[in-house]
Length: 188
Image (cartoon, rainbow, N blue to C red; front, top):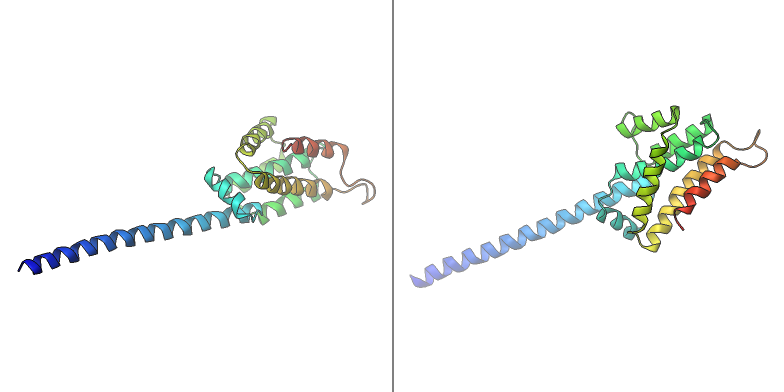
């Protein structure tokens, strides 16, 4: 009889142990799946494929919406540098937003449309600069370089979208270059 009781308790102890192990393994699997999904979402929005950079952004609790806004403010500033947004610049910005997964009709897309119609207040750029400056203090060298390349590369593409007069001359105006230089100064 005592062997039977001991056997039952042993079985209960094993079941409890394996249930805890199973729960831990399920939790670890779910955490890995969530991390992978968050990395994928950030990568789709930003174009950044470096796992280390993506993990740093996740550790800072930066989500796709924040990153989408982060990547669009410089484009808007470059487009407005000459005082208005021309058709080619508008298309370049909307294409960049679509490529980053910004769905038409979403609150972020509506905000972007508003910015294309009316230049955002200067405090939007100032808030962006402060956010990027703070973010850069937390990132490693590779992450900083990837963010700089992504943000400034797309901003330059918008500047070049307007082109020179009838496709001739400088593709980037002096005012657009000034904005690009100002944006780049954050990464020094």
